[in-house]
Length: 174
Length: 174
DNA sequence: CCTGCTATCTACTGACGAGTAACGTTACGG
DNA sequence: CCGTAACGTTACTCGTCAGTAGATAGCAGG
Image (cartoon, rainbow over all chains, first blue to last red; front, side, top):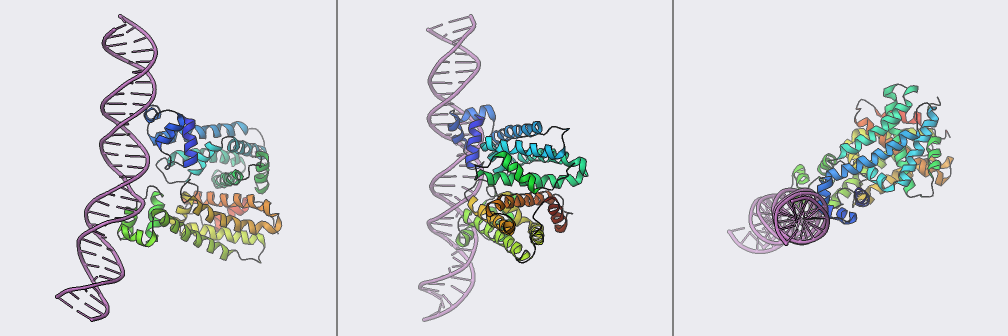
């Protein structure tokens, strides 16, 4: 049911997706969705939360503390690009709606902020806290934009994308 | 009239903005908008086109050919961040709706692509054509994300933002 | 003062879609 | 058999706009 919702939202976007279409895609009738997931906003929020949690879990697991910064960044990016490749639809939902000034905007912004905070924390040891935030924003923005480009270049593998991005970033080596 | 539209769109987003509200903000009645600018989609497209043209004009003028790459990039970024600071609403319209999977998506994607192509062209001399595109995507993505961060840190000046971004990019020095 | 033309408004229509009320249908306990 | 409860469906309501038809106001020329 959530899968169907993610699929339709990723194809149509939040506003163009109708509950009828989602219900049909899920193979159930509309009132069922209202019974189980609540309103359209609730449904969308549920999609966001699930996809965001998947992504964050992957990244956190891939870049454990204790490794050198360079390597953590490298592996974190790897995890990110892998997620995009494997959960295309989930990522489109997160990304395509990410900035649309909508009722649920807070939901996505919060998810994004968690990732940015993750990156910022990763960079923090080597630079002051408030210096690392803007860098983290920029890194995440760059990774997102690169993923966007990669959507039209499916031949690009995650390691290639990671190498590209690492190659253009001047990050603290320690 | 376009000004009013940009203002309302920037506050509400495309879908939440009603033609009635735009008409009221412009101090005219709804049929006037339809008479002069056409449908809601047309109106939004007109806003996008105007703002995008302003932005592109500024960037092109700021980074003329003939200068070293580093400097062109620096000045291009300066122009970009200045635009964001001075045309906040225009940029929000471009940025916040940038990826929303909408009828007019092509309009914004096209505008964005022109900027990316600009950056790619700028980097092209020092790397192969198809190598510079992903880099351009990433640079533009990073700049956008940094602007987003700067929206909540109004004390940041354009030169500061530019320095930050230049500092974290490893770009060809020639 | 009337005629017609342009510019603008008020007040409507029609579609669409979120959310719901009321109606089956199956399963099970007595 | 018959209540009744869990689960599901069809077929509505109702609000909200995008878009428009028709009325109105100003104004040129006769």
